[in-house]
Image (cartoon, rainbow, N blue to C red; front, side, top):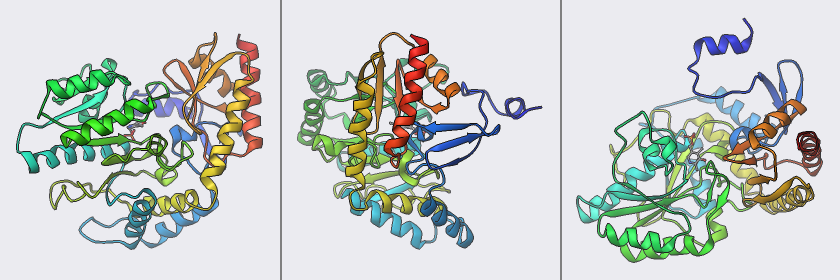
Length: 393
Ligand SMILES: *Cc1c(COP(=O)(O)O)cnc(C)c1O
């Protein structure tokens, strides 16, 4: 039995996988079990923010594994405290909760919003408004929050009191807030819808969310699981929009490949979840935190995010020179590429065959390269893409 047969024999078939067995990686280059190399334009799905096995990250993770791999959350650890202080320092948020994934970070945000409202107003303000075409995770509650009908099958009943409005429709938002007057505790959104197709929200709409929520004492929850941690050239994508949501969730790129998910809260709501109201056995795993510290140190180092922005400009220029490309959406190194004639899934597969790891998001080709990618590696990947598009179209 080869690896793929062995895997499929014992693992539930929840993913449509490519026939590729990954063995190792170094910086922005992955190697499969046959020794074939791939330029990485995916970082997993925006996870390996420092690339594969970055030296300072590996050292941090290995040192921690030698020291203490886990302890229960009934005790304190320095590595967690350091991580939390760093993250709050960088983001300006007051406190955070530790989970292990994006969905868990969002679960925390949902619970926090409902309890904030319950503590202040009692029962009845349980509705959370989310956007059509959003994606917030795979647990029952975060699936319920996700504003795409394709996700609302089979697993009935879903969690109630999620109301969807169209993205960029301020009138629609306001009429939902009026219709459900005194029943809404939060509005939750991604600044750039990731899985929905790399679609940035309009600036006016994002500002309207912030203003309308403030008037009504409704919390704003920004799901930055994909957009956060420097992906867009700022630490948080909401910085591009000039808003400060009450709650921000982070996960994917936050610990450079170790599982982590956090929910950040501002002064107004950072003490809502008291002892016994929320928890996670693995939350704040010390090895994840050590990896996270390496990521935060790098991203907050002098000039790092400026360099992300510069590389993103270069990347976009290169893409816009390709005749088969209609346009590029997204901000910074979160790139959604509109193809003129080719199907994104076919291009993605063809890129893989030619040695380039790419992603798709709906009908677009999606690139989430490691933040440490070099100009030379951008060129190498782009050349592969050009070759594929020349063959395909
Ligand atoms: C990936 C993603 C999630 C879910 O994260 P998991 O770690 O898979 O649970 C939630 N929200 C957004 C915006 C995402 O991109």
